[in-house]
Image 1 (cartoon, rainbow, N blue to C red):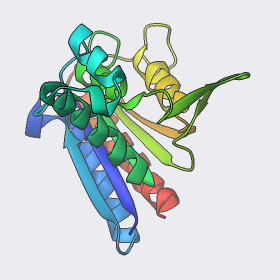
Image 2: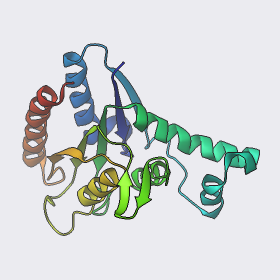
Image 3: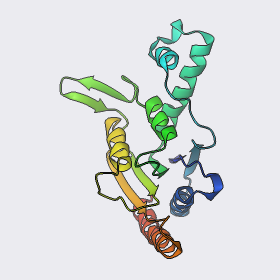
Length: 204
């Protein structure tokens, strides 16, 4: 069965523009892909803990040496990795917070990046192991930052996905959402049009 993984990272819950746009893309892919299964992870509602020394130590230990608490920590990271491993497509909904990604999305990437499992070091540098997948980033912003130095969100997501082997990434922007009703409506409508076209191209 084909699987699509949707990652929502907004703190705005059901009112999040990024989630609504990502939902539209997923609905379009579902309509065009018979048998597609969708797995959703809502990092805004159920955030992964940020890494600390104890959590990092637990993830680095062999399974046989972990305590029960450490095994539970490892299981959380294993679930993150398993979801990505099983997915043929990944849709990430990410609003820009203070010029970068939500901290919950960074925590998700911190749990996803595991040496020997999702990437490995070679004589020629790191090599991602989660290859053959397509990803779409749907990002919303209050201002206009696309392709500008202050946009640290898109380069970060692109770098982290490529690090684990996901290099086929398309980005949908909805910008200027805090600049008034007219700019907001125009930006959202433009994103919807782009999403509908993208769904037709991305359908598996």
